Length: 177
Image (cartoon, rainbow, N blue to C red; front, side, top):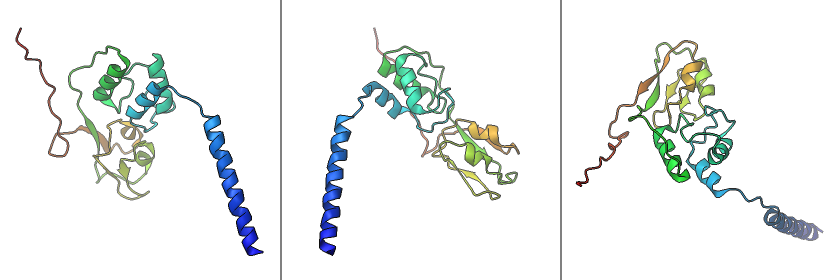
């Protein structure tokens, strides 16, 4: 009796799995590979600073031309240049933008937890009514957390290059004519 019940459920599971596999291939929705590529470049924080609900919607509008490639503040100028290159669009990028990172003045932090809730990249850690701190390697400098802090103990500071955060200067053209 037990063996027949076990056999029944194994056969039922295999049949339903095969049905789901066939349905997945039959009802597959093809998407634009360019949209997938642009979405893969975006930070994925769903922060909404570009005016869209999420990064997928932003990627669709960037590909269709409704949004400019430099619409993503957390991505910065490097992301904008990369997307413009992929799309074949010319954009003007200001001189080297400064990279920002959030810094919490820990003596003033009351642990209200609003900055943690505002950060779409989970770069701020801390429990409610406890001290909070920023993981600088994860922070994109989007400034959403600094707007939400009621004590104004969270500021944005320029990320100074060190051994972990080094960037090479842009190459200059030195071709002799």
